[in-house]
Image (cartoon, rainbow, N blue to C red; front, side, top):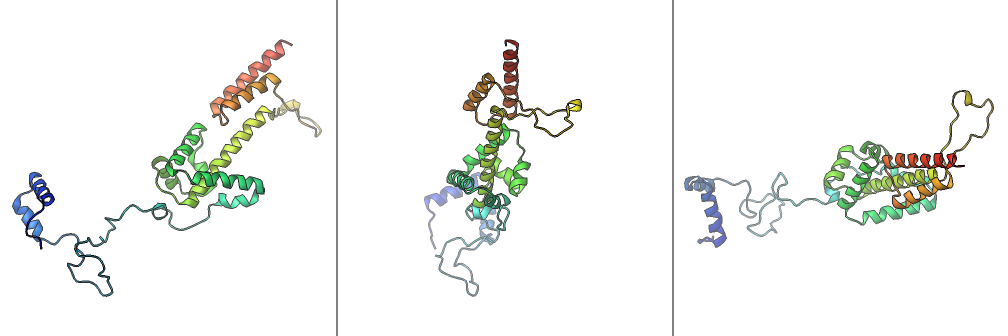
Length: 247
């Protein structure tokens, strides 16, 4: 038993007294049993290890004092499961599946919080609701929201599902943009224009000037937002109208 207080102990005691705590209350508190026992100060249960040195804090029953768990321990979904989107890789061509896996593996090596902010920014840029991600990946809505907004840890397999969706969505948007630049818009007949016999539908194709506008825009931004795509359509329409009027 130490009979003399150390400098640190004296400072702590002084801080307690300065906080307004009376000496009588402090003495009374010291005489009462604390919320935990020092390992070795009380009787050990049968089979309990006594390897801990005397003076170490015993583990609290409510888990306080434990360090923050890893991503595997703090995941809120508990049970293991394979996200549906990962199973869908089997339906892709070997080349496409290998490409997606390579990109996802690369993202998994990066800081999860940085990638989460990147995915969140992409969702906002393209006005994509988180519900679409949930429906496609099978992730928990609340957990996904916490991961994207606060960086709440997520198991590696579930992050792989999120990143797989992210990679696919980027590719899907890029393909839609490319098809528009190649004249993939279809002019649908309506009303009296409906053909009586099956035939090839008239396909609208942008002219050279409009295609140049689209290609330049694609070089600047490969994943344009909805507003940017609408602005490009208007610009191409004006260009096509100007070309027609000057022919």
